[in-house]
Image (cartoon, rainbow, N blue to C red; front, side, top):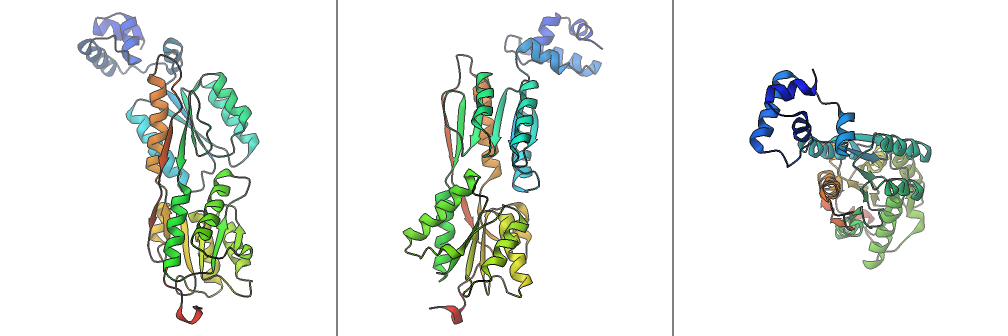
Amino acid sequence: MNIQAVADRARVSTATVSRTINGSNKVAPKTAERVRRAIEALGYYPNTNARALGSGRSRIYGLIISDITNPFFPELVKSFEDMAVRNGFEVIVANTGYSPERTEVCVQRMLERKVDGVAVMTSEMGSHLIDRFHRGQIPMVFLDTGDPANGISNILVDYGAGVDDAVEHIASLGHTRIAFIGGPMDLASARTRRQALLASLKRKGLAVNKSLIEVGNHRIDGGRAAMDRLLTLEERPTAVIASNDLTAIGAIGSLHRHNLRVPEDVSVVGFDDIEISAFLHPALTTVRLSRAAIADRAFQALFRAGKREDGPLPALEYRIRPELIVRNSTAPVAAKRRG
């Protein structure tokens, strides 16, 4: 089946069929509907490569993430892809695994597919790779790490507010010996969360004890190992704030293994609010970072850039404020340990 057969059935030219397939507003609505009925009746599937050549647009977006095994990212991918499908776009998902070499391959793959825009939801994108997209006039949107410019937007998460809410909650329960398990310091997002935690402790007049600051890897095993180290201290923490939920889950596993109860002996707070957090035992108190909100801002930034015909989209910055979700993994500090 070819485009000529569709044109004959709809009694239009092949050019009109092409314009209809590519979403051109130059085709009258009744004519476009007739073409769509012909396409459906004949079971015609347009050649996407040919469409890209004809329209100059592939209707494909790239989505670059760090770690597909972290439930935060599949939830973000699903939300982004849902929006893309509703608007007639495909999505190429690239998982870097925090590897610079793999990131290079991901970028090359997207350039070869001539994507119409890229959502960079990872913090390890090198400037030389950003330049490759920029030279190709491909719109980009970043999560936290973007430097807004023409064609480049940034989604800024107010980590300070989210972490501050977590510290305020823990402090209100009488905890003063508060530990923090962060992520790898080579990740911008991990550094930002750590800095937000230290600043929040200082603002509230709580001691910043370096022995209570640990580094994990944003995975369960890293959280477990970091909690193991904290439990070797002469005086263990009464509360732990983790840089993400997987780290918090690992910390809870370590506490259980050492016959300590959560939250009776140690309170634990996560960050992200991945779906499983509500079903843990105990259910995890965490700072919710909405994947749906991030996906919405990312898609809209690229979509708006693609519809603009008078040059690159001016720099845009979107702000997202996390929300504290209080569940059962936090409680007042045990009376015997106060003071």
